[in-house]
Length: 416
Image (cartoon, rainbow, N blue to C red; front, side):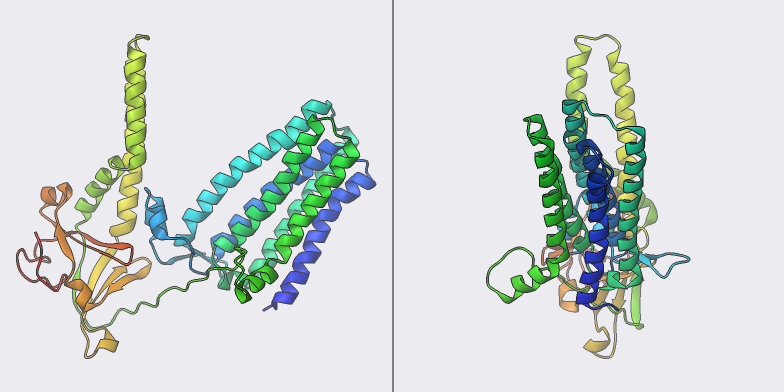
């Protein structure tokens, strides 16, 4: 296991090698400004992909609030504890890491395309410069070099075991910081060129800003330590919560599982009740009303589009609800004492293990609710909101939730 100083020196070596590639290209290979910006633009994409790979295997607890990802599918992933083990490599993918990775890739991709359109495309269109065959070959080798450099950084992260102690946000935040620095250099440098600034000035500016952004990224741990030691909040101090240890007692008095058919139908309802589905449906309705008044035959096309959209949200809703609850079972753990799990209720996923637990006194606060799906299948749902989190035991058989009395699961009076 490398020490922080050794990791920092290794990262400095990799970044110096990566930054040397465009510098050598400008000084020795007579690269144009478009060639330099093209290499930097590709490096931005490689940096984003490398950070996503790092975050994918990070084993620390995500630092975001799962309630912030309560959207369709994203909420199901962010609230699920557990890992997917890879069959060959000694690595695993933490399910809760996926939402923040997907969001970061979406936002970063938009920024990457914007930086390329303005920084590279804008400069090329303004100057009218084109790369010669020799320059294109050298730029291709430069692109290969920076991609290999980022791959080496990811390999060092995995082989060194760094992934075992960091949350997924850490490499993503580092990549976004680097993208912000280099992207600013591309945007401002492109603006200078469009404004008529001389090429040597723009080259020096881009190189300096890029190097500064990389230095800040390398010494982020020093800034984090300073942020933690002082009362000055620079925003660098990391928030590294730990997973709560959940033990499921072997002495289980009762196991209750949701009704599978009710879970699937509940997923259909979940998909149609999604805020995004409501917005898309309202938009299609508005467009249909405006179009049918002016264009004959468009109603049939809109109807076909509406069917496709409805099918998509149905599939997403079924996946969301099934991923949350289809493999869930709720265990009432009774033991000889509190330490062994006396009276606790444990939500256990048969694929990913224990998800949450409620003490015996919390079980008495579970409320009975009946959704349309429950009424259709004759099931019951128990619900509890505590500490900003909603605990839901959906679509349980009626014999598990005694109407008007005490329930083995609820542990107290049920409320209608």
